[in-house]
Each structure stands twice: as C-alpha cells, then as structure tokens.
Amino acid sequence: MRLADVCAIHTGYTTRGRLEPMAAGGVLAIQLRDISPEGCIDPERLTRVQLENLADRYFVRAGDVVFRSRGERNTASALDERMREPALAVLPLMVLRPNLDVVTPEYLAWAINQPPAQRHFDAAARGTNIRMIPRSSLDDLELDVPDIETQEKIVAVDALAERERALSQLAAETRKQMMSLILVERANRIGPKIGMERTSK
Image (cartoon, rainbow, N blue to C red; front, side, top):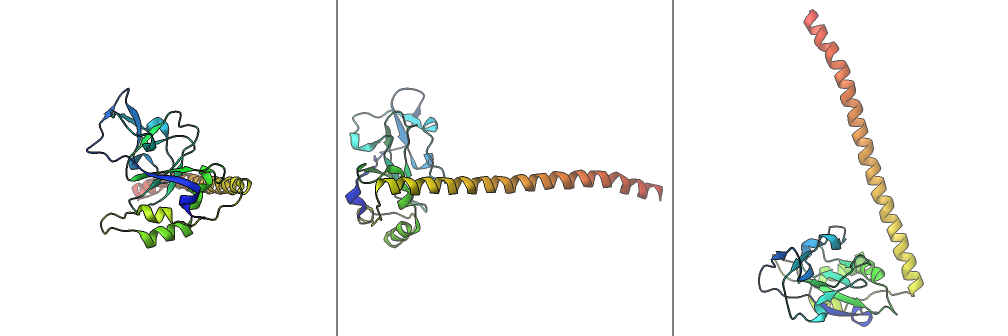
C-alpha cells in the first residue's frame, strides 16, 4: 500500500526566524534536534515558543508520527501517551497521521525505518549539501501493511530485540570497566614491589 493511502501527510510549520524559547505559556514545539539518534522524543525536554494563529495541521499528538525530511537520517518516530498536549511540528519534520483502522503509529514508524523504505528515500533524495526527501517520495512509498494484530506482534518483537541489544551493549561495557579496574589494581600491587627492587639495587 502507498503511504498516502494509510495516513494523512502534512508538512511541518515553516518558521520565519529563530524560535525563541520561553519559560511558560505559548505552545510546545518539536524540532529536529529534539529527536534522539534512536528516534525517541522526550516531551519533558521540549521547549515552548510564542506563536499564535497556527493551523491545527501543524500540531502533533499521541498517535501521530513525525518524519525527518532532511539530513542524513530520514527516519520516523511515533509519539506515545507521554505527549499530553499538542506540540507544533517544525520543518524539516513532516506530520504523518495514520488511519488507525489500517495501521498503528508504531508499525508505521517501524516500517518507514526499515531498509526497503530507506532505499526508496536514498533513490529519491535531493540536494548536494543538505539531503532532502521530497513530499512526492513520501506519498509514493510502498509499504507492506498486515492486519493490526500482526503489526502489534512485529512491533513487540522489534522492541524486545532492541532491548536485548541494549542490554548486551551494557553488559559488554560493564565487563570492560571491570577488567580495567582489575588490571589497574594489579598494576598498583606490582608497582611498589618493582620500585623497592630498584631502590635496593
């Protein structure tokens, strides 16, 4: 199925200048820098900006998906229930609003981030200094969309695999730190003996 057939697609809000953060009031804003390399968005870290008379299509909520249309990483991120109030999506982010009867937000983001979709974007990318993905390539992206139950299972297994990878990496780093501590302790034990031998000579 084409991406345009399973969700509504909107461009993010185009700013006329730098968005100045404010302590209170205004609206929450999601910018490219607010998305971690892993594709996570922490609503608690979003800044507020003073903007008025904004169209509703620029705002994202839990259940929506945002897509990075510029830069080296053209990936999607699903917004979860932690997003307790609407947030302004700022270009180069694109807003994807899935048809929940057909596709879940989590599966949609997962499918977009997989190699087949990424190869589609690689072929469609424009720009020399800054990589850009045209809107038309989003519309025409072909996705395999199984039934909702299968989608949920795929996302659950993927989450478990990612958790396993993170734990394996943590275990490897912990082993490395422990080995370093053991070697340093051993070196400290041997060091004074070597010094005493040299002194006695």
